[in-house]
Length: 280
View 1 (tube, rainbow, N blue to C red):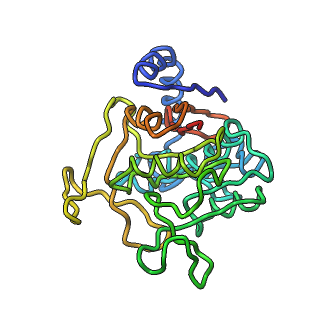
View 2 (cartoon, helix red, strand yellow):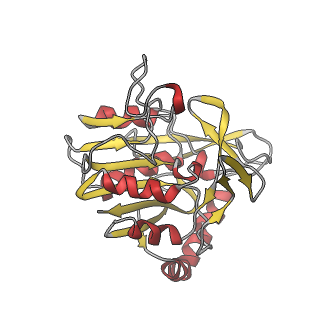
View 3 (cartoon, one colour):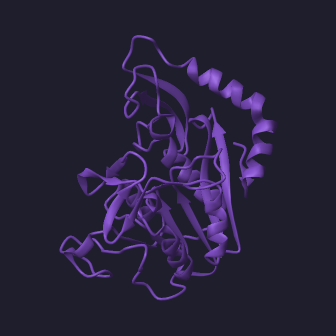
């Protein structure tokens, strides 16, 4: 699998030009996988999380249209259940994060298979969920779930070697404060891995909604994403563009970049996709 580390929009433009033929072939191949008359199908590939060759399950969930696949969220491993995005996250984590078995890791979720995967592979993993005013921040409820907000983490400075946040930051109106907090709780030399809804052709972030006087003001039609704690969904405030990386550097990180990837053999289908890394 080839990885390309991109630090700005111009890097992406150059990458697209260099990879245009390969990406066109990739899309032609995966579009050929889609059957005309079935509700689901399988694609063979190597599952990094299962460490074996499998038949990935693919369907049209989330797309709202027959024959259209949301590749990032599908291509699910029949053994681990992890989709395209999550399998790639664990794969790139192992390549980029230089984690040891006893690295101190904070992940901004706790009730998910993602958290359990990290907890099974590393001995010092802390997770949390946003429980609002149910209990004080920094405390755990009767089920052992810790309550945290990324805008005011209840950890001392330089508590962790690694912070991981997957599709969370887009739900935070004051995301710049969350960037500062993630940097604060990392040790010097620590690394931050995150994913967000990303618009690679946009240099600027796209603000969908904002908070004013304690109320939500919608700029674009409201979009809600899945919530592991409820069926209500969580409002998306921001779709990020390349300025996000500069904002990370302004928050105190020495480097921040996008890892661009795609791979037929590993089942990372759907054209170029991105995971983001920052170094303190």
